[in-house]
Image 1 (tube, rainbow, N blue to C red):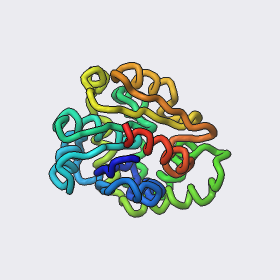
Image 2 (image 1 turned 90 degrees about the vertical axis):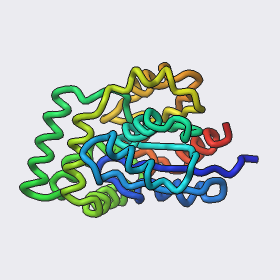
Image 3 (image 1 turned 180 degrees about the vertical axis):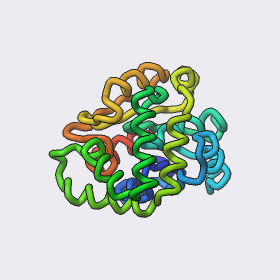
Image 4 (image 1 turned 90 degrees about the horizontal axis):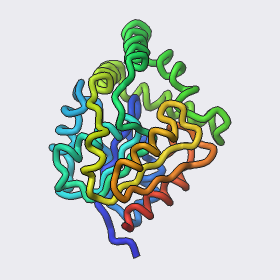
Length: 234
């Protein structure tokens, strides 16, 4: 039987607790869950410190998706003794390439000038696998999360992502049970970068979700919950 865990979940860019709603519901029987906010600072280090400061648990299992993965890695660097397990979903340890940073700055300008509706529309084809079940409902959730996050927090998040550290040197030092997982059709952070992370973390488990894009927690919630349960049981 799985021992009851304290579980912290970190959303990605332009995401809020809705990103993790299927996990909060599906894992409620095995974990006490807290979904952190991630829009109050313009650096990954600042976001991580803020999450650690407000976290209701002294020690916890930690999962982050996309930008949430960058924050989770930084939380491990800042407070490794508090992190019992680490799960990195649809993310990367690499810093932004120059062209990716330029694309982010263009989206920031769009947000300043026109708000987040065109930003969400521009990101949707890369966030959700086009043939995903319930793709229209998923698109509506993405738009709702964007509106909930708001322009100011989005601008801070993008600045934090652009300035994030290269975490590849951190990977070999991670000494807790680690899960690396992604959608098999993730365009933003392809399976290859997850293979790199899993190879870099001693003893990490690598899981790929079939017919799934970047937002695996929403696209394949049952598969994600199954992987997280196995990780929590390690």
